[in-house]
Image (cartoon, rainbow over all chains, first blue to last red; front, side, top):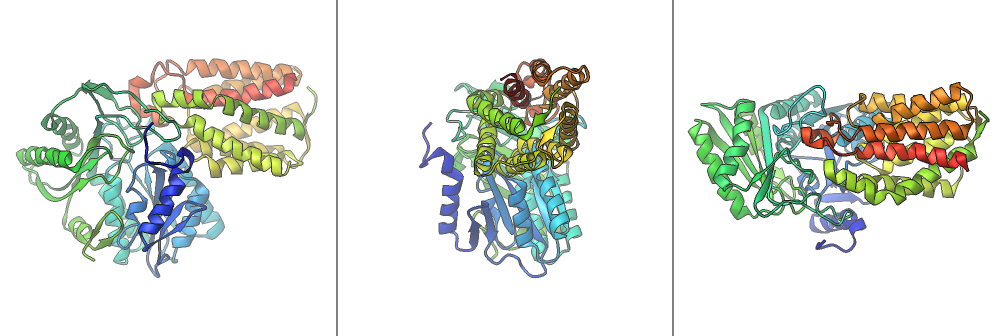
Length: 333
Length: 211
């Protein structure tokens, strides 16, 4: 294992010290590992919190700030944070208008956020709503499984719900916007390499030079298929085809196209993929009206990418364009 | 079956922590095949936190003991294992009540309450390739053994054997819960890490009572 760390057991705590030093707009509770907007709670505003395992940076801590999240709870690498962290974050950001939990659909995240919401209701009488993202078409949806994973669309939900909350929407409306975004978004990812959890010390899986893993999540877990490595054009096709067919997206649709890096793939290659995505969508008669390209929901140093499409309407475009000031997304302010 | 003391129950928890520490790398290795390579790391972190709490103050009653264990696991493990093991111990403790000695039937009842709590939270079914696949047969074996009036060492030995059988039966299963379910058919052929750590829970009980 070759990593820029001091000690595998203190990676998350050490990074939080760095985040605090780099971003004076944020306030960190080091004991509970929660990142706050320095001005939380914001009077009259619905609070927005998320959280998850570390290793996906900038998700979620890099999205804390004006127009996005009020707080993010950091778990250990690839491990959900705990209910006491989320409960504390919920109490701290609640300004009386209630709190929305943005949760990625993984058993651990869902169970811990459920326990936190129970605590918030029982002990503090805070209104909590949850939006569970589940946009990964690589996973077959079924009543008998854990269901689809929450991946790329989570970033879009946090941005768009954050804009709605900032504009003064009430809890039910912010949650409804979140459900709408999750319902209109679909994703799929692939890996060129595995990644190494610092505490584990070795890669989660092995992938030969000539192979790629299709249908990966964001935790270095193996995907659904292993295939011979293809070109960027073939990979874009391989990922987009199930996405487009799933919603489905069709002629005349306006979309936000999000090409996400898994952590170890340079922006140069992500733009090569984006060119293919734009070409393929053009062929379907789908208009790319907004875009996002870069590493926003990562899997440590994994090389690879994911593609997310979000079907847009005027309301979603307006909320997407609204000002945001966070470490990782920043425009209009 | 004789009475079970709170001291013996604490010894059980402590021995579970020891087994988890010993098997930490193995549990993580199982998890890297079908999960995210952290089960041993997380369980060990949680049980070490439990040991630190117990070292600071030994609870005098069973409900206090398991409340400490459950709350500590919930706030230190994360992932799915935190709420699931945490809920198991919290409900186990509530069912024990504020007592320093329990009958064997009380232990069975507490175990059942713990597993019911875990099922209410995680909603596993038998055959989903989860910890429930080793916990459920272990509980049934324990219940049957106590019902036949077997002494604690024999009852827990029987529960342990059942847990191990249940654990081994997860190998060919296709996971329908948890992170392994994302693998679909590729999850078959691997032993479930959660079922493996759950079997350690009953191994710990068997070893503490055989001594």
